[in-house]
Each structure stands twice: as C-alpha cells, then as structure tokens.
Image (cartoon, rainbow, N blue to C red; front, side, top):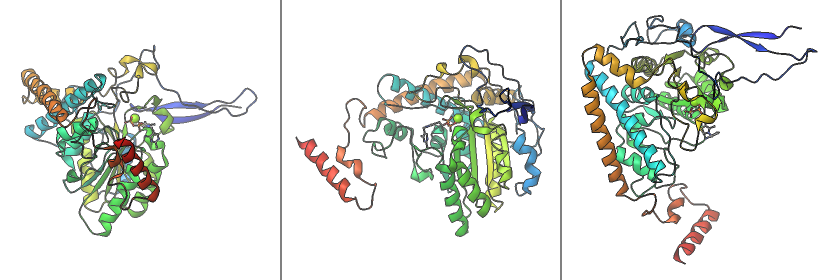
Length: 433
Ligand SMILES: Cc1ncc(C[n+]2csc(CCOP(=O)(O)OP(=O)(O)O)c2C)c(N)n1
Ligand SMILES: [Mg+2]
C-alpha cells in the first residue's frame, strides 16, 4: 500500500510534499513533524519566492474571496535592495519612517539593557523581541489611541510607542515601588491602561477570545473602536485561538487578530503548530480574510495592519494576519537555543533584520546616513542606561525597598475571600516576628 502524500505550503513560497508513512505491513505510523535544522546542521533557507508587487491591495471593504491569494502568499513592500515597490507601499513620509526606525532602535536598546541587567542579577527574568521589532512598533503607530489592544509578551515596542514611560516598564521588571502592578506580575507582563494596552497574561492565547469579546461589546454599543490581539505560532495550537476565530466569524466584530509566526515556540518548531498550511490560511475556513505579511518589512507590516484596522473600523469585520518573522534571540533568559537550533539560523533567515532593512530604505531615499545612525544609537544607549539608573531609585531587585508582603492580595478581589484574609493575617504576624 502506498504512503499517503499531502501537498503542503512551504513558508518561503511554493509547495512541498509531506509523507505520512505506513509500516511494512500497511499499518499507520504516527506522523511527527520535524524542525528543518538542528544543532550542527548547516541551515538552508530558500529565499522568499514571493516578490513585492505580486499581490494586489484590494479595497479594505472588499469581499473576502478577493483575499484568497493573500492568505497563502506573502505581502512584501521592501525588495532585497531596500526599495519600496507595489500597491501595498503605504507611502509614508520620511519623518514617519525615521520615527519607525527610532522606535525600533529604542526597543532594541531597551531589550539589550534589560538582558544585561538580568545577567548582572538586577532583574529576575526578561525576554527580548530581537528581530521582531517591526511588529510591535508598526502596530503601535497604526492603531488609534482609543483602540483596545491585547499584545503578547514579545511586543515591548507597542508599549513604548503608545507612550508607556520606559522607566515604568523597567520598574515593573524589577518589581520595585515604581511598578504599577506592585510586583504582583511576572516581569515583562506590562499593562498600561492610559494607552488602552491590556496587561500581558501568562497563560498564552487568552488575547484572542478577550479581544473578540471586547470588539463584540464595541459593536453592540456602535463605537468606532477596534480591538486587536497578538499571539505566537506555538500558541495557535491552543483552543483559545479557535474559540476567538469562531466567535469572530459568527459575530463579525471589529477585531484584528494577529499570529506572530517567529518559527519557534521555546524549543518547539512551528511545524508542530501548522499541519502544513500557513497560519493565515486558517481564516478561510472561518469565512474571514487571512493575510500573510513579511513581519521584518516595516512598510508591509504597517500597510497590512492599517488595511485591517480600516476594514474593522468601517464595519468590514475581522481579519487574521500572519506576521512571518524569526525569533533571533533566546525564548527568554531561562532558555538556551543552542540546545535545539543551529546558531546561525537567525542570520540566514531570508527576511533579514527589520532595522537594517528600514535603515537601508531610508538611505536609498537620501533620508538617512551611517553617521546619523551611529549618533542615534549612541544617544539611545546613554538614555536607556540613565533610565535604568532612574528606575533603580524606586528600589533595586537585590535590596528593595519592597511593598510589604501582605499587599500581595490587594486589588485582586473586590471582597477578599475568607481563606485569603486568613493567609494575609498570617503573613502580617510573620512579618512582625
Ligand atoms: C497556556 C500556557 N501553556 C504553556 C505556557 C508556557 N509557555 C510560555 S511561552 C510558550 C511558547 C509560546 O510560543 P509562541 O506562541 O510561538 O510565542 P513566542 O514565544 O515565539 O513569541 C510556552 C509554551 C504558558 N505560558 N501558557
Ligand atoms: Mg513563536
């Protein structure tokens, strides 16, 4: 009996065959997808076959049938030489482009400093978004201040762009007296009400059903606001992903749902989450548009996000966006990627680096130079270091001062349950002895 064969999409374009083998006497075997490269392998990534200009930009209120190719292809704007090409070019002015570059660099320097502080024992834990800066930053620039956003934990940039003071973000990670969540959250679980940024939640995937529910309420009240949510490739295996999409497809609320496909979920390759189709293609079975975009192309991310936000705001309903990118750093400070992937896999990712690509584009336009970049980076490095010093004036990780332990229970329940009241009293007594 022949092995069954499935034709599946290759992330860089085209298709390949996926075999599901049988035993010699014809019984099934369990198909377990594998990662393309493991430590010691030489990474072989093909270049993207999709080119800028390949895909039309339909009207944001177009029927979703017109977006079939967008769910399987790849929206790109910047070509390999840094030129903006095709109908998805958002035609941003040089000032906006330079702002985008500066926010991405700010995010990178912020991350770098945080990682350093963790290594020095001045933070317990943190994680970076190296290589994915375009995603948080472009979204932060596109969504309106009144939109309600449910980011994932790898989106520091969206908090910075929407105005959360960096010092507050650092205080939160230290867990000191400047932390607005009073040390009761894990580090990097930012939340900022003034910016309509809902707190990061530790159980991954909650963002989708929550954003869909919030968007349903907005539509019910006839508000012109949009809700948006992000989760990762690995997280799309959670039921929450499908629950959110199902409600989105039934009630068609103003929501934009985004899967950040950065190839890895800690040490699990995204092949274990997709079953061979693109993440965006899943939208089709829910009857909503799916669009796949080069997540390291700032212009493409900006344009596709703006398209979907406009569609949602004008009652066109939900969109699922897949942001194709690569997690260049470790999953977190508790992870060692050299155990499960080759070191140079990141360098060989065909999407390149989002900061280098936007800088090159600006240089092509004669709006940027190496000297400007060097000056900016020197300034950012100093500013971020100074901000960290300022954050530590609210307390250090090693020696505090910390809020008294009994405040652990504050703001969680409107009325504290009896058994927790008892525990709080016990902590108070222990603290006095
Ligand atoms: C419900 C739940 N299961 C497992 C975890 C542990 N966990 C935290 S992050 C993570 C990987 C998520 O990967 P992905 O969704 O691809 O996001 P990425 O880290 O790549 O941005 C896992 C398994 C969790 N926080 N919540
Ligand atoms: Mg991932």
